[in-house]
Image (cartoon, rainbow, N blue to C red; front, top):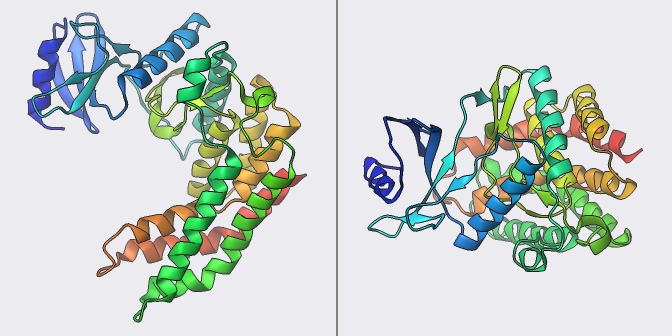
Length: 328
């Protein structure tokens, strides 16, 4: 975001007394408190959905979420002269959750469980129609088809680099896990679908990670709900756990403590626990690495691709042991 984006602030009834850069945004100091100006890729309807969810969370007593503020015309999205979209949101002092601190990781898990108890929107058929996640079964089926396409592409290359050779050597192990996950979803009644009985009304953050939990002493704020949608809430926990455990070398004790802290606040059904197991079984990081490679410049393969795959392979045994613990 460049300085010209600040011109957008003329569309708001805001007295800005200071600005400073943040990651892809500007922090704004105002007499009413801290605000943030950031890019926005969603629609006006999605912004309305976000704020509807923020209202529900605040009504439940959780105040520190980044509500989108209206501009002078009452719209939630503002545009510059190039038609780029921006929003201004309430913001909070604090630093990102420390992924090396077990106490902060567990606090972030407890925070997520508290949020999930409030993140339910019922009797909202139009919202559900527009902002519901795809079924887990359809999602895994499409991802597995993509993996096979990338393998086929690499196989056909006349000259293969070190990463590509290691990718093909590693592929059978990871694809076996991917296929098993898809098969398990297909076998479990209702698990592969966003069923009315299980997920109706339940909303996920959609991108809950350490970047979006702001710590200030014992206080926390949760921000960046742009990916929120109707979905199984256990998927938020899965995403957070997976990312943390990748950084923590798949520490099984930490993984089980994270799950225990969550269920103490928000108990989960047997079906959701099964979905957590299937999600963890699926080799998501391998799939993402394959997609990054496929979308990159194939004439020059970054060394980072090889490094990431080597780390993934080294962690594979520990990851499998943790996943087995979830199966019980």
